[in-house]
Length: 115
Image (cartoon, rainbow, N blue to C red):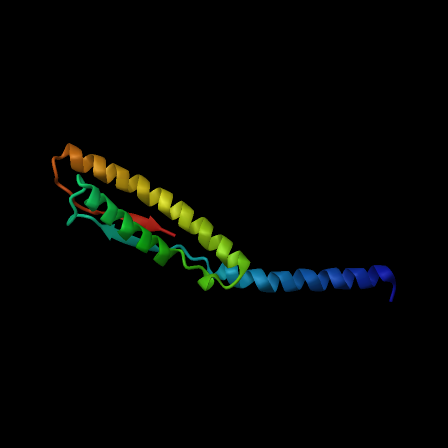
């Protein structure tokens, strides 16, 4: 075999093996959603806000488990998911807190955490 053909075959084998590694990661990425309730919390208090944040963090961990983080790719996808989900949920939480203050302590509903 010529050097060019050997090089092509090696490159093809490497490409196929990289696809075999990344395919399970892509298959493992499914958008999940969790609802985080807060109607039982006093969002005017620091402790109520902290409790809401704790609930959000728990939901984020739940929706952003990508392949159990076994590979570097999975860990990177999980971290990206956690960051995005946390930012989105905390934006919703800030709105809920502002509404709570505006409505003089009436908290109803839940916020959505997407992973």
